Length: 96
Image (cartoon, rainbow, N blue to C red; front, side):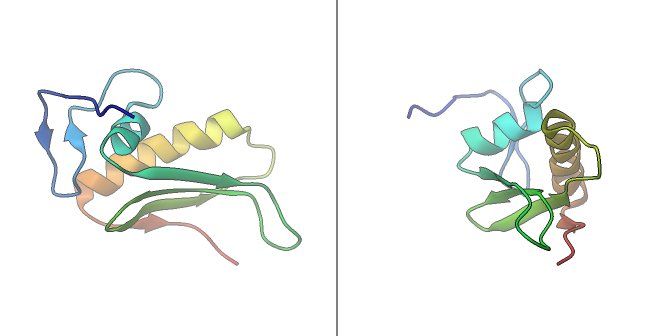
């Protein structure tokens, strides 16, 4: 897959800034720069979750809230990825 060439600067987390516009701009930048987004449904006691990571490690991990749509979970993950990069820290609310 061809990689996007952007004119933005690289953050310390490796993402290109500013991220592309749109509802999931930070997630798009993450994936364009070699990162991954993984989502999974509930399995037994383990709730549904979404995780965003770069080759260096996880940036954000979120549990799906009761009644939350997958689209809203992705929007929340997008915002959390941006916060993670700006604050240069991992943000995780995963509880097993």
